[in-house]
Length: 308
Image (cartoon, rainbow, N blue to C red):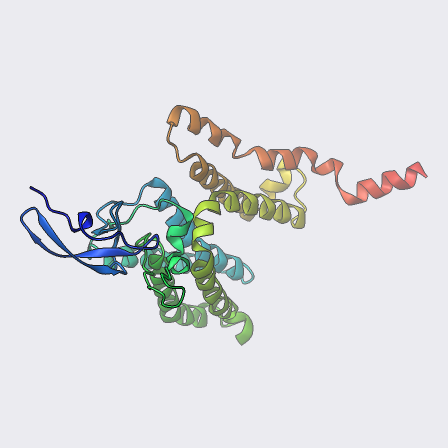
């Protein structure tokens, strides 16, 4: 007969407080007092801390991919000022190695697979806000990573990115950018020293919000930045796109982001319905090119002048 301490002990207060399993004797489990679950565990329906043995689903991986892309895109944005192809490749190498190392040091160590807890709701990301106060005086602290390891793995990844950048980039920049001034030469590195703390705070405060909103953030930002780039580059026709290879690279990069956003929203749960949505990827660029000549400021001003 299975004996459970839950049947004879009152349930734990709060959403995330639970009892740890102290010992298992056959079918009998002995539980401790209500409190915080150890790292890598979260409470089940009976308020018992259970080890997370699941794997991230497709949406979880897409979220981690988004968080991994952020520093890479920012690296490329600030490197763009110096137009150094080798620096772009180095930034990609740094982020790729950081991602692989992060997965290898995560549980289970030495494997590219990770075990995780299932994300059930937004509050799972902010367990520190749900510590109960039974007598309104004493607070029972039950803060733990209920979304293990989606919250902390991002910090580990950023730390490895920063370390690799500080080890590799200064040597590379010093070697290939001798003709530039000192400030221009290390501009991308200085920028990273600013945006990494910003990304860290963003993950710490808004990780849960980003988890649910990142597909829409990708779509909106990629559309806006593509429109701004094409406008700043004075691209008004297909011929203008073909003048410089760099413009095609930027266009295809934005198309990849469009596709990533669409896949993240649909999750590709039903391939026969979701895959056709990828046909919408070129639509914003085509719409821009077809309507750019009608919204060109000089044309509008000249027509306005002729009207008067």
